[in-house]
Length: 457
Image 1 (tube, helix red, strand yellow):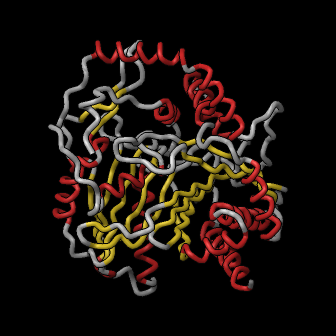
Image 2 (cartoon, rainbow, N blue to C red):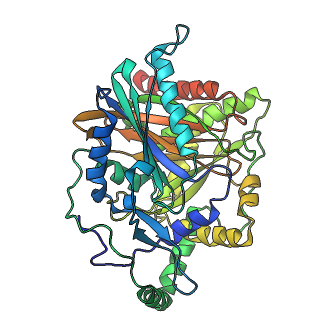
Image 3 (tube, rainbow, N blue to C red):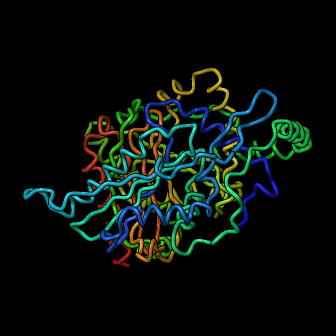
């Protein structure tokens, strides 16, 4: 991989990236990330980790770049090298105590502590004048393992591109042709000229952009009639600045076998379980909505490289009936998935971006998402590498996905398949979902029930 500065000296933030930056005004930042659990790596000292990452940063040029806002008429912000880049501003360490206490299961306490550290890091705003990422090396001496927590702003990458970053930082990442660092910013005159050329070129693509806009409205499920408002629930209240993380982990292959047998996708099965778990919690609260609207982020790409980062994500809202029987729920979800066949992936980002940018300019975006009645939750599903990735010679055994959803969505679900396993991360505002442990337990039971039905065939 060669840095794009040589062939394309102006690297602009995409329209989606600008929307993400402009609308990131809530109490919790729009960050995403992952926790990499690394076996037998407790003896890997922090200085070695720092040295390894320092040597691999050229594989991901964006990790040493910041966004530079342009004057009026010069177009969207551009990515430029941070001349005084210092890895020490982005990478920190935590050493977990060797004994959590006699009354606490040591394995459970260790897992919880790692998730608490990850939640704190992903909920911490990233300085806009620096490259938009942070990392934490967590050493767990009691269990002979370590964790690398990596957090990036959503304007820097989406989930698919984030996997490219993780792969590049691993032992098998592609060794690039390293260009001199830092590269100087392009002259302002060149940036302005390029902006006007882009505007002129955009005039010739109006027909195709209109077609994509119509496809985007189809992906959003919007037709001629006004969108139906989602039922009010106690899970949808303005969220605060903190989140709690819990996880469900299970083998991937049995779920894929269920999906093949039932002629559906893995994501359909996850939606069945998530809807069942949320409906169960709401019933305990005395609420019984007839359906739950789940927003499913859809990337416009199946894969990415480290010189093609940014955010290329749309959403598909699915109104799923809260039927008590899993088969009935799966039948409805599968039918909805099939009805959207032929819609270009990620096209909803266009019309959403126009609306969100307008709201941001008017200063009403936060008011809107704090009181929206379009979705109840988000379920993000990303397919990771099938083979284990290694770091410093040690295997990364588990990858736990993280993503913060702003507004009034009290709980969301991040799913990642990796090396034969599946992890579902439940991300919740504890003030809105105090029964998060119960929700996670019910979700695990829903998934186990899907597997049990498959074994009965």
